[in-house]
Image 1 (cartoon, helix red, strand yellow):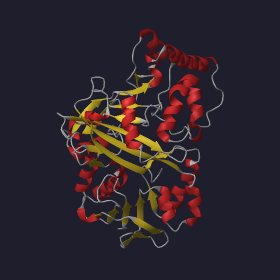
Image 2 (cartoon, rainbow, N blue to C red):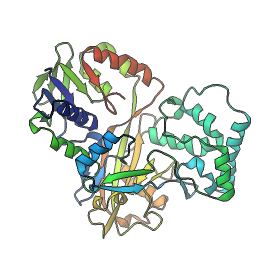
Image 3 (cartoon, rainbow, N blue to C red):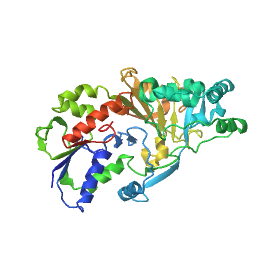
Image 4 (cartoon, one colour):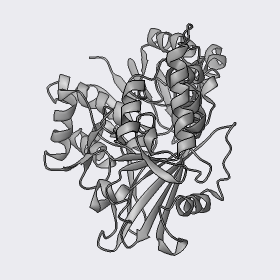
Length: 421
């Protein structure tokens, strides 16, 4: 048996550990997992503030196309450990809510903005672009037209990724962005009908208790405790000697290493100095998560909404989740309080004043009519995540094609949101 070491107790690391445990028929096989924090879940962990509100690190929802994954979720929390939701996601724009996907529901816009969006789509049908898009900005223009691009897609995607769409590739899109059908949009305009069923997550589930982190805490508890090593932050990796050194003075050797630490950090901590310049081709954004526990109950306009997008400057958030709607147990006391969670992105080209961000988010909630005044705020929770989202920048694939195979030559498998970028 080879000794397998896993770095990181997020979903990728814990999933790897469980699969190895499963493959050994749940025996005490030769793997070990090391985590820098003293809790499981990584970016999918959940936290309770001092007033008793539960918070995720961003707006996570649970959906899949895979039976094996779904069975695992039922195993971890039980079939009755979930609350199921029909997605209600909206865009706040032009002083109103427009159903998501925005491009299918422009009939809700004021006439002038509605015409600009429709005019852009008509122009696309009259003059279809002959070349393939070379970046995300061109994909938006070639697929959705100038009107939708300028009103929604350009400003919104800059707020999400903290980088302009022109600096991003378009190969990552998949099911993430709805392609607009002129006939469908025109019908919705004429008959004034909403079109909200698009997307892979139009039905999702959420844990009844403990937030998204409950899933990964349960998985960690089902693994042999002696295999999980908490408070072990990596400081150095020797890929030649196959040895890992931790800040607490401990070290371990390995035959095979499964890494979920951000790829650029891993390379910079290793002896593979010749690849440090390659990691500069990888881009990421930071995320500021602000949770507000609020007195009373949400307005009737918000009670069924799941999350909302904010392309305009009236709010610093790119997304706000009605987090108490996901589960009433996310509130300290659902009979007295409810909760909203906002996300703000940051990068060198989109700086954020950390000292002002909570106040700015509260003002943004007032500006967009999510709450009436600061007097409603009962509790605040704030967390900044330096590695929030890997950005699909133009040089991402080039870097990955060099780094991942090179690491595999050294029996290192880098996986997960940031391990594989």
